[in-house]
Image (tube, rainbow, N blue to C red; front, side):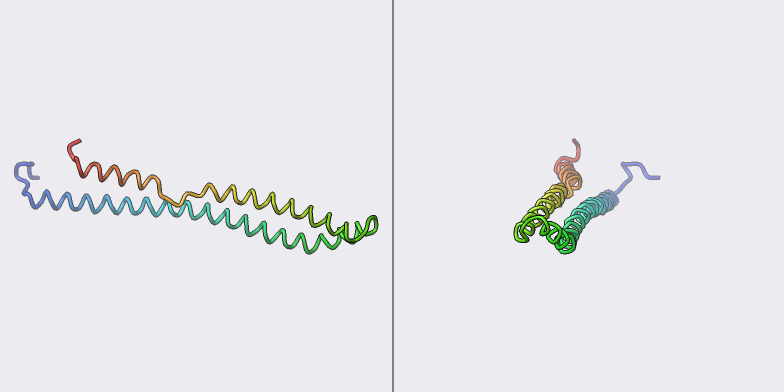
Length: 129
């Protein structure tokens, strides 16, 4: 093992280069992990919105006819259709609102990586503290 006074400038520069390479690889790995987490959240929110749209479509098509025909026995068929359409519009608005709220929690910027990169840049400017 060599003492610090026996270490050559080339070795010191090589060590610094290796350390910087490892640091940046770790930063890239952290960024990938953060982006993966956010993509999962976005996928879930998108799935909710897609599921809401599909469920809303099926519900409107299948149940609306049944409700319109059922209400048409009591009131005029035009009013029955209007009432059913209004009910499904309210349900669709609630599903849309929930999916949109979930989608707003998605953060596309890897915050932790950005902060550690700023710290690394600050350290490189002033490595002695």
